[in-house]
Length: 525
Image 1: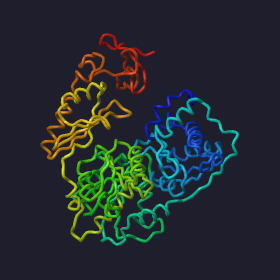
Image 2 (image 1 turned 120 degrees about the vertical axis):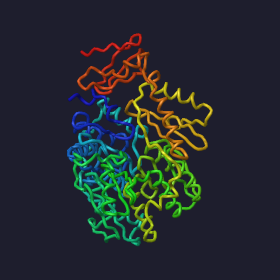
Image 3 (image 1 turned 45 degrees about the vertical axis):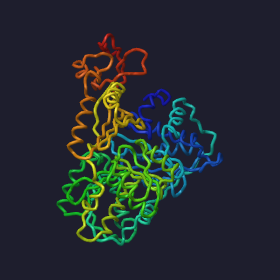
Image 4 (image 1 turned 120 degrees about the horizontal axis):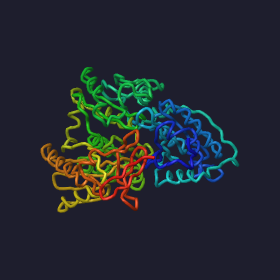
């Protein structure tokens, strides 16, 4: 393994977190260094006015305890104490950070496959740490190899079980005790929902029973995800839950991702409810409690959301995609709630952090407050106003040229570049934006009806997939369609725009190849 100063940390220290494969990208040495750098960059030491301690949790991945131990040792050597909460959902870690007013670290790779792990960092009060709020400095400090803390007294380490407090707090925020009896199927995907659901919706944390019959699916904690990927945004991962809801004649189905910070909902018909519709539902409930408040939504959510917010006396505020933008805007505007198309839901009463469990409680409470016979599908009817494509990913290597072509095609419409390119008309809109980590463009389309949405979707996709646009550096489209790196992985190639001369770069091994007169020169040493 190369030394930390020789590693390309940009591969795993991303926009919002640290994430990579274990142990080749993220190992104990790096976890130790991140722990020490975290203390240095955030000024955590009590002698320097900081909190003096860091709270740490981990999900069910086998590498979690070892990585936590190394991270904790790095924190302790930097002169700070460590409070380990053990197994936790990400919103459980946020609860600990908020309630204890301590910076925190959550070891999880969310929905990524079993070989991955990662670290989500936050400041005291669950405030996010991203590239512009500490992660870049942490990466630079590690790369320079100057992370040294041997002159500080070794901090202590202690354990604390916050699960009962977490469960009690969520129930206080969204009471469901007085609702009617409901049958709810929950698919935890072998992730942390199998740990938190019995505590919050059941009696595992010592709380009274709720008027719920919970039918559990895949509650066994297993970081190898033997049943399906713990990523409910993918329709294939909802199939088992949809079948179970119909089989058990359940009122509701809930699906959590690996670290249980996202929640997706299935109605009694077995149909998936869009996160935009859930955002609108929760917005009405929060505005009823806090009239006239601001509500945040990212630019990919349905037009239904700002319409519903306005109809309920609130002010809708639009942001870029990404939790750091949502949380920052919530802090600046004192917004009561925020929602994203990805199934993340943020609550002012939860330190502006996202919680899949709180969203689930809102759905249960909303249905539980209705008369028998009212279904979740009928409850959601007012929030299903438009036809949406969902997010469509397309490999595009010459992304700037594609977006320029789309801009030219739709120049007579309303355009904005808050995040990628959004084109709007009276009865439709679409957004095209680049992935932060892959050579992909992401397309979202919404229109008044399905026919119009399909027509617009297909038109934009045709522009995105045009070979004369997508092939960089004058490479023939027929050649570009079959071109791959000659490395063992045959990795996809992308243009390297920062290079002074035309070059292609492998997205797997990072090898580079010059392009001369439209012909790639491809040799590996």
